View 1 (tube, rainbow, N blue to C red):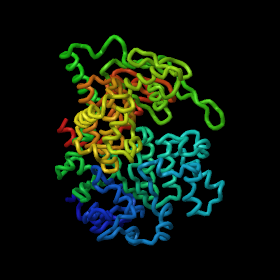
View 2 (view 1 turned 90 degrees about the horizontal axis):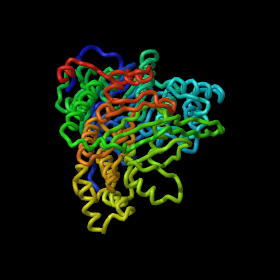
View 3 (view 1 turned 180 degrees about the vertical axis):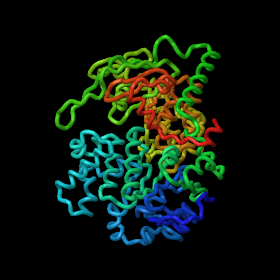
View 4 (view 1 turned 30 degrees about the vertical axis):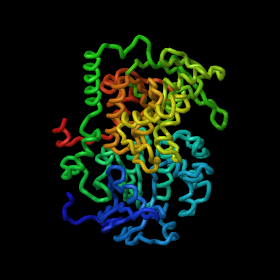
Length: 564
């Protein structure tokens, strides 16, 4: 159903006309992924494609960029770019379009970059292919773009390999490469998923400037309805490969016609200001503590870090301070949210608390026991990993694709000598039930699971040996809003049921405000602000934290306000 009027529109740069697409395999009947989809993208416009996993968003993006899987087949319809039908376009003609006419930002930054080449050389490739600039001019252009997308120490980044950069930095490199040759169309598949809110704002501001000043058009694939509502002129909502609703962003968000669209909005943070979320959580936790026996707080902090400092050396041998005099304390059964931009020290702090990185100075205690890095103290380290486990950001990369979910859950049980085979089977069944997964999942491989199911398996694996502390590294950043809601509810329920202590690392302050009791903000390796979530979000004391809060995508509408 469409909100669009019949008024005369500007010329379209991209048109989908009754497109249908299926995936084929020898072992199974064809699977329909896209069914009879029609929409257009105007010149100088940002159009956002939103929907849950499996809705067909990324497949549509790949149909434009010519990067469909080999077993994909378009069964009907057309995709027309500037009067050129892209369906069955020869590879050589696509090569002339990519980089010059079509810029593409893939979702997975690490997979989008060649690990054997420096990122500077890769970002300059569109300029080498599509312009007459010499090598020095190409480098100047790339360094300028690196600065525009918010990278620091651009000369050093230019000469770095992908593994030497964070995921957010790699994503910014890909964005710089996509806009290097000034294409007419950018296809951006979740371009800001791995980025902190301030960097996200800078990237989206840059894309907005390019659409306004250069007439650039953007096809934006995103699960973040805040980004879609704030930055796109129009939104197209997809479900199961069908277009269920399309129209101006303000109407889609304020007066959604379809129940599916309303469900997406309800699951997002659009209708719930960050401070209001923190207030609701604080009130809920206060009520829970009042009605309990008061055992959760405990006299001894579950996690205690005192004056942690860590310095690394870069490729030139120059020292880089990753952490500088960082201290924190978390009571049993509570959640500490850790936020900060790329390079702020979040990952180093996480690895230090988990015993994976040895600090230069300072001490860490888990459950009242000092964390030892003495290689002789193997028993103490083994006990640490019974107490503390990690849930990683990317469950697909963190889980062995060659093992079934049941085998993945059995591995830590076997490693820690948990009972016999029958007892381990019972524990696996308990873990699936605990994470609200059907028993049949145990026999399936990760490639056969949805993103939400994979994350549940990652959580179940972390819980296998009954730890008391979970470090959750961006646990929902790659998930759609409805799946985010399910995982956040699951984590909250597990904490209440099992008395778990959480450290949650996230660049999404909406997530942090919803799940955290306290917040610690890092900048350049230092703690710039800490306190209760409500105090930090409502009464930020530093310009940096105020900038983080101001950068959160928020779209206020009468419909949203009526639901508060």
